[in-house]
Length: 137
Length: 137
DNA sequence: CCTTGACCTGGAGCGCGCTCCAGGTCGTAC
DNA sequence: GTACGACCTGGAGCGCGCTCCAGGTCAAGG
Image 1: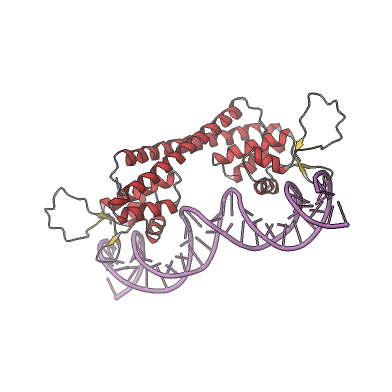
Image 2 (image 1 turned 45 degrees about the horizontal axis):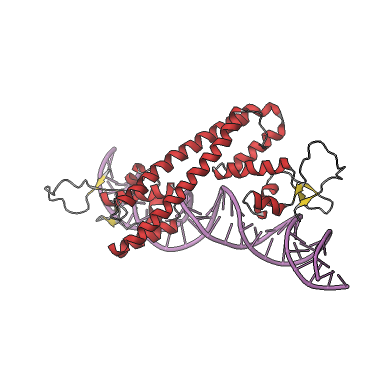
């Protein structure tokens, strides 16, 4: 139960597009859960086609989007922003500037986060090395 | 309304211990909110003394703990763990090993987080530089 | 004396991002 | 034929970490 045929494979498509994947497969490969994947679809972060039996069939493209989404989530981009971003993508190429702006602003957020983490790490390291315990400085 | 006198200041304490602070002051200095500070107290992350009027009077020591707490929160240490940590501190010096372990494990978590962020940042940078948009790779 | 504003308490409410559930359909394996 | 496991839908529930609210006290300023 690995791959699903979405469309009748003629056998000789150009540059084998690797058969579509079932939701379970995608969840496993992207370290998410089927629940999360269905949730992302529900809230419009991705649209996935169905096979003959009505089951989700993730194309390569879909999987790449899932990977993108999970990366953005891992870096704490709010789902709202991701929805906005996807909306812009759907609206066409003329929204590229706004998308770019969104990404740039997210980049800044990530950098700030990194700085915070570095600061916290310093405190943690101090606690660990100069170990007297307690919660003060 | 800046500083509060907690105990009758004899005028010549040793090495001026800086007067206790009101909750609003602490919130401002630590970039938190009074609500959060009260919440932390409620859930046992800190115990703060009161002045004659029944108001919280944060000592230097208390403020340092608040700083510590906020740093740990910024680095995503779960409140549960922070509660455990404080509990260990209260139990005395013999719990130092467990505290150390807690901190070490948190350090690892932070490092993992940093790695994730770096990976996400790479994706973001790619999106920004090679800008064609879309949500796939 | 009265107003104002910072503080107090106990408890309810909320936004986020999932996560779980009930009840049902498929399709292969025995 | 039937049992199983992976999938489907719509909707409810949940854990976290605050955040807000009502109703009240208190101290200083005009």
